Image 1 (cartoon, rainbow, N blue to C red):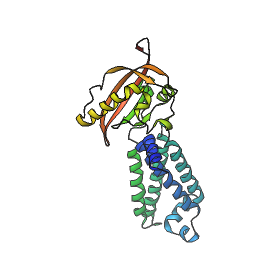
Image 2: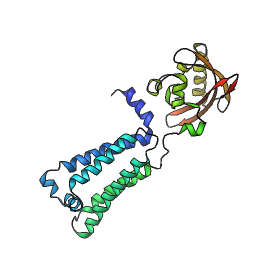
Image 3: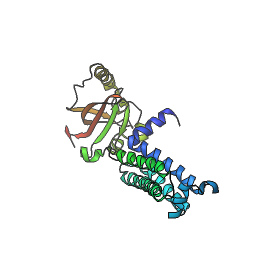
Image 4: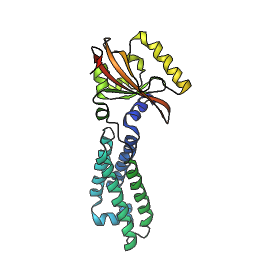
Amino acid sequence: MSDGVLARVLHRIGRRGASLAFVGLLCLAIAASLAFAPPGQRATPGYAVLAAIAPLEVWAVAWCATGALCLVQMFLRSDRLAFAAATALLMLYGLVYLISTFTGDNPRGWVGAAVWLAFGGWIALIATWPEAVTADRATGGAAVVVADADGLIQSWNPQAAKLFGWSTEEAVGRPLTILMPPRLRDQHVEGLARVRVTGVSELAGHIIPLVGLRRDGSEFPIALTVNAWHGDDGIAYTGVIRPMRGGDAD
């Protein structure tokens, strides 16, 4: 996978999604280690304790199902079920190891318990991070475009894709200039350069009447509201765009 494609995927799924990808792959690896454990490994105290509760194949199915759920929901706006399932399974594993320490079935089970419980706590903490922005509720169904300091599109919502005719996969990584007529592009580039120097956008918070450009080359009037904010990678922009009719935004 090229760096460009990887960057687009990471921007799309965000930190929560990336974390779910890691957890999902780890769950699948654990499932494989349980399903294909050799006889000598199955005889170890840790595996023996698990087998006393349920066959290792059942544990493998649980881990596999959780991993698959994580890998599916990493692309979705709502991923709470995946986080809940992963946290519950990790905590259950930790409790099994901890209890087996006190019963004497697995004298060193406290080491595994500490690892599993800490990992479960980490997943629970990540679950508190903000989910993917539900821009439809926040903007009343308007098109929303997020761009970096260089004016490259980082993400946008389905309304933006419908309005301009570019799919999300096609738009992410392209410059904002694809959304405006050629006569406005130099002014746009100069404005971005000024903001990079001053760190302040004079247009932020104002409703700006402009002209948008669809993928098919047709132009249409829009009302643009820009917000500039400082993130981990520098200044970024969120544009809320509404088509206009007769000079008024829909």
